[in-house]
Length: 239
Image (cartoon, rainbow, N blue to C red; front, side, top):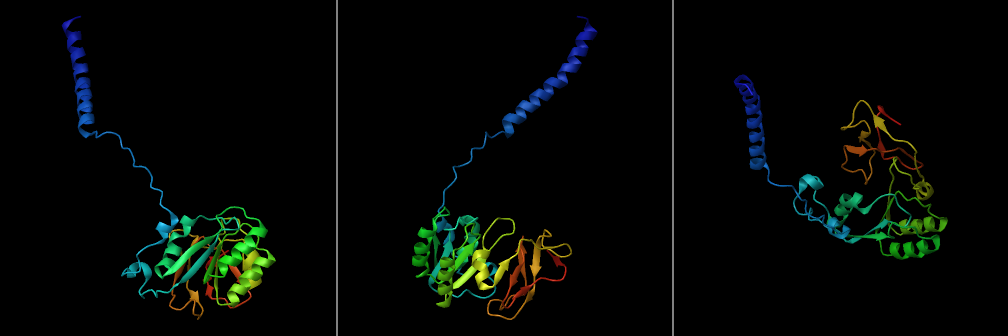
């Protein structure tokens, strides 16, 4: 090999060797090994729903202090309901912070009509409030009558539906003069983050709406009512 060729080879190889050496040095200097995540902790729903927000977190609970009471909130899980308990942790935490116990009726599995009725009857007999979210099995006439008697005795009923999920909420809502529509509401002029996240400010005077000035609903639908309507969207909100 001639001297000129040898010099050319060294001229080409030297920068490559420097680059390789720099890379190897940097790798061993900065590399701290692979990350192995810790095992996931399986926390039960009961632990999630018990919080301590009742003491002094006005930013979380609003300007007024929560009134601590005692009672039992019942959540329907006997009609193949299309939600998981983790999705309503915040809602049930608020109830727990006010001193209410929380129980589920059923276990999100298929239960025959014959089994559901006595199960619901026993549960409602000791409850103060009943939350029904996205049932995928119709409420029977007997079950509707059971809920009506529960309300007549002073019980509270909360119905929640989601326009993005299949449900049979109207089987229980319609006897009370409510009908969840198969639509979703949107506002392309004023919204929070997304045009499906609408503002509701048109509240009518009622104990339920007392103190409310503005609420944001994320992916909501409209409801027809034969009774007094308590909340209206603005004219820019469409279905």
